[in-house]
Length: 213
Image (cartoon, rainbow, N blue to C red):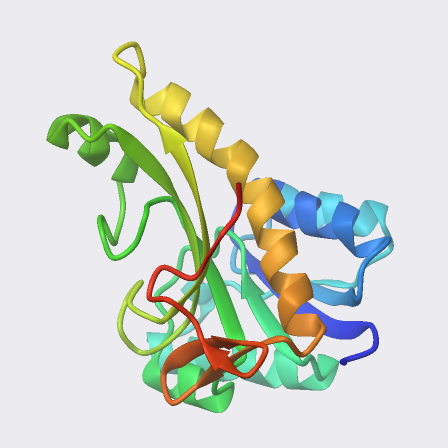
């Protein structure tokens, strides 16, 4: 078990998933040791500051390309020495160099039931397809965009009255339960990525990961 597992959270905006992680960490086995944003006006920075969590801004616009930005990000993260890097609305595609620097130790949350609907605009795409269910996935980050092994997911039903906005609200509620749960599993040592697959309690997980009901 990783006692009070140190976690760094990367954000770009409002930080509602960050808030869920902050709230959960009070009585959990992980500790947020830093929050880094690529945008100085990200409201998530205020959320962290209110709880005396160190915050940092590394503006991607200050760098000529993605690789040099990621190297600056790596330098800051390494100073904080986390066991896990958590992406919570971090709107930057990470370079291979970044992913390889933290092998098996990066989690991301995505608003769809992966592998369906990687990328953006997931709620409208669900509606356009006429899907009867939708959901959210937490996955390990690999060099493939939204393609890493899934650690956990949660489902919602899509009603005829739903819009992209109402689906987003439903998904947010599931996200705020699922993400702290998965992070805690990692912190306990029960969850890990082995050979590009998610494992729980030393056994390979189903491709859809654990389901939070």
